[in-house]
Image (cartoon, rainbow, N blue to C red; front, side, top):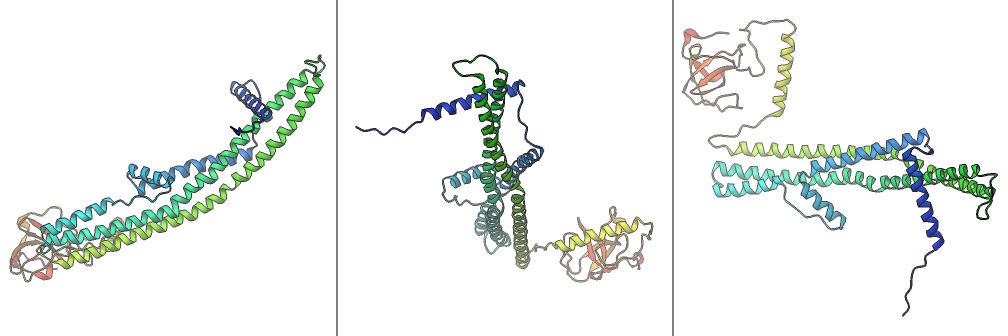
Length: 390
């Protein structure tokens, strides 16, 4: 029976073992401070420091981005395992999609002809669209941002780490050779030992030192070239970052479009309590207008409390008592445009009072326990003797 055994080079094994022991001794002496060590030049140290900072922050950015995209840590672990075994990731429903299915099912049970059931179905369908937008956003962000950064960490940074490890090994060999040269030089002039003269030992130590110095210099240049390439990698990372931002912009734009469509659909349903769409642009304009008004008041141009204002809706008075109000009859029905207004029914009697400052379009009204703004054109004052004229 023939058994093929691998061919071991005993001399190489012995040589490697001797080199390893020499490195361990050198490193131990450096830790104890009993020997000198070769220091890297300032340029190399700066490059190495920049590489370490790049690696640390890139790892954190990748980890944080993945946490944002996939908040569930268990799902992230599953995706990582499936990626390593080169199998497709499992398709799982997001929280939005679970919510959507439950809303649609509940709307069907409550009744598709009833306002609440119809609204639940509409909202559920919108949540489904948002869930699909979220899936697309996660997939696109992985392709354009996290995957390239992780490829950089698993590729270039690992190669740089490996070459820096080899350079450190060459540095330990160089310093060990330097120590042997010093020791051999101190032995010159003494008697031969084991048939080898001190001069021969010194010459061999110098030859080993020259070889170690050449290998160290060559490995140092290789490592420097790799470290210099990090600046190019960061330029590539900047392009990936721009792509990630564009992906986010598209995602939030799609979500905004879905919600705008949902608001229109809910408003079209009507019913006893119709949905009042929220106009974000108008709210933003109101905030800007309030800020401008506050700045104008701060300049010292004080106006009378009874000054007439127009344009935007007035702010509601903070303190209004019933005896300050006047009775008014609603001329025709009015549906409130937003939560600051009252719904009015034709011929009902409500209490109203002027806004502060007075506004030519609106008054402040009280309808039972409800309070809010009412359009001046929709009411007729009943207590004429207390009517306030503009």
